[in-house]
Length: 175
Image 1 (tube, rainbow, N blue to C red):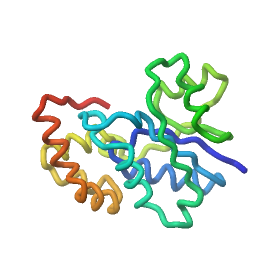
Image 2: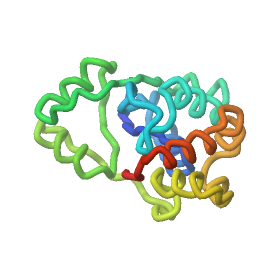
Image 3: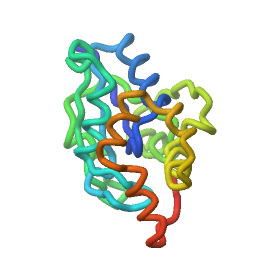
Image 4: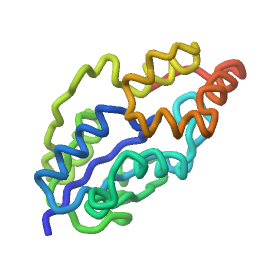
């Protein structure tokens, strides 16, 4: 079985994430999706809970597609020297790793693992920090940058109100 690893925080799950997973599903038998910083929530960087992120992702795919996706929450270890080993302790064996995150690439490469790049599509708009900022400013333009299932789900959990409250409490945006 050919499995691939795709890591993200998915705060929120946006069209870039969606398109990447769809592309990986065409090339691999399974896509192992690691939900990073799974323990963190209710901050400007990570406003959504791990359970909410799982629900967002699951809502974007059909049952047939979900059979090819393995969602695995991985908490932060806060030590880059052991982070890759920490990730591997949580996942089944994988063939390849895809990411455009420079730190992820560097850490995996130090373990002799080549990280393949993903094709960006309108990265400036479809980036979590930008989407969260638009949500905090009550700017509805963010809705075009996430799958429609995510728009519906985030409305159900009042994510935009939560983000605005976090910002009012002094939260700042970081990637």
